[in-house]
Amino acid sequence: MRISDIMTCAISRMLKDEEKVFHGVSSHMPMVAMMLARSMHAPNLVHLNIPGGVNPKSIKDSYYSSAGADLWSTSEASFPLAEVFDLSMRGELDVAFLGGIQFDVNGNVNASVIGNYNKPKIRLPGGAGSAVLIPTAKKAIIWRTKHDKRTFVEKVDFVTTRGNLWKIVTPLCVFEFRDGKLWLDSIHPTSSLEEVQENTGFKLNYTEIKYTPEPTKEELMMLKKIDPYDYRTKEFE
Image (cartoon, rainbow, N blue to C red):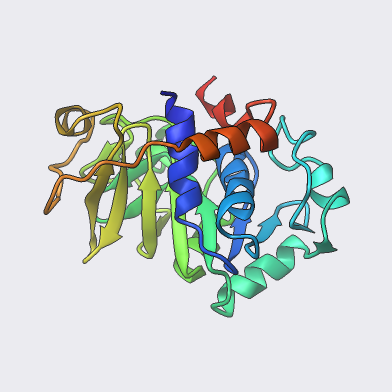
């Protein structure tokens, strides 16, 4: 059982029919998950992306950045990136897929620096779209292909953006943000509560232990069809 398949299917199931959903660059897993959702249970989901395409038919040329020309050239319509931000700020973007480097128990996201801001160990790309979309999208989903104590910390080194997260999907589990804290939503079948806690820099909040459902045969078959080049595993390379 591959963790990339578990994560992609878990993300796909979070998406509902007729939702307007956006992914940016370096977002191969969400891109595939969105196409899986449209193919399985959400045929009217609206897929928006960086090149400005709506509901692209192909992702074959999107290997490098998940922003390939085919996301526009094979799409049903054009919806430029500036309009996506406007849509979100009007409260009409249902889901935005976003990234980050550090996350803390209070739902703060750091995408700016590691260490002191004025003399950082590492200077990161910064907020970019996250600073706008996390506060304004109805649901912000973050995915991360690493889960360790450097990523999930008690307090982030710098707050790039805060609050309004919905889910964080990692190779070990799914977190949900509620009541101002990150809560353990489900543990992947390839992991355990002990492993999640050992790799998390804060004490886990949970009320019950739930496990992420395994991908179904139908989902795995569809993944092979829509993602024959296995882009969903690219971020693990």
